Amino acid sequence: MFENKSVSEIYNIIITGLQNELNTNLKQLQKSFANILAKVFANVYITLYKLQAWTFLQLFVDTASFDEVEILGRRLRPLVMWGELVGIGDPKPASIWQGKAKVTVTQLNTYLPAATQFKSNVTGKVYYTLTAVLLDDEEKEVLVRCAEAGTSGNLDIDDEIQLANSLAMIENKAYITEIDIEAKDAESESAYRQRVKERWRIQPQGGALADYRKWAQDVEGVYNTYVYEDENTQTGVLLYVCADPSYIPDRIPTHDMLIAVGDACTWDPVTGVARKPIGAVIDPDYDRSYANIFAVEPQTFDVYVTGYDLTNLESFRDLAKDSLKMYFEAKEPYIRGLSIDYEKNDFINAYDCVATLSDIANSVGGFFTGVEVHKDGAEITTYTLGRGEIASFGKLFVNGVEM
Image (tube, rainbow, N blue to C red; front, side, top):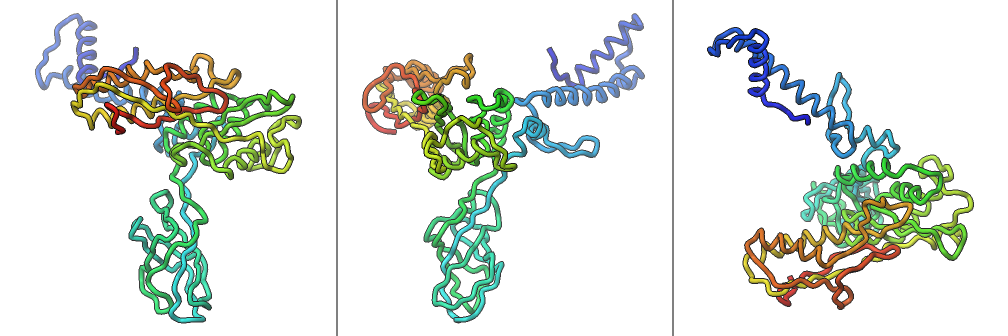
């Protein structure tokens, strides 16, 4: 077993080794030669121990560093190097909010220059105009973009922005009228690591079920895809798409996202090279409507805790909600040939919820007498996710009161 050692441990090893080799007890005085020499080497060796341990961790996707490091003058990110090697590429970058704002004109037939700056009291971000605009009407729409990437710059319809520096030709206040691009944050380390792991585990097979999942993940915002053979046709393929919860909290993809998945499964978005086998059908109407591509179908489960003694109720509630959400959202349908057999995770068991909540109650010093899991208003003990179904945590009730 490899363990990092402390400087004092290495020092003791060196002193013990010298004593064994010389078959004598060395003086342990503060300024003795052997003592000083052992301390010098201990400080040298600790660096080698740590470097060896760090290097070993970079050999595996699960432990490779996401941060940038400099080695012999080269700057790299070990996990991203693994991603590039397997064809994932770099993590998806953050996008920038862009939309239109309505300004009130005070001097007609003048120009509002490009790069005119506005500021939002809602987000605290700076926004600027992309082009010069002729102010030939009392109200004009101008195209504005946030100066920073990420969701923190997102504005909604009717949000107010104000000129950073007053201008004579328009009023200081403008209002958002249209959203062209909704900003998204850069891909997180955990999401990117998961994509790299999925690509390593499920290698391309030239049109097998795993390929459709791989191709669909080229679309921004897609978290997973569940692929089935169409039982009604010989060549049909059915895809159920699950959105990334960091983009869409309920994980139900938009119509545009489903179309984008269809396109990504048909042609490589970069090269335009065909992907799916010629005979495979995901667009039976041949009009890019992709009738064989669907949104996943969330199955909502409510949890009822009875007989709770109300000890530290708020702490119990918060921990229970987080744990139940993680439990249900980790479930996914099992597909033979696509899912990993020893990692089947399509089975929901009420007793799992009992065990989870018991641990939480014990941790906060409380207890309860019963737990029930309900689906569609009826109590269930077990449930197996079917075609295209995902599990979703609904509501938590404690002693009959919704938390």
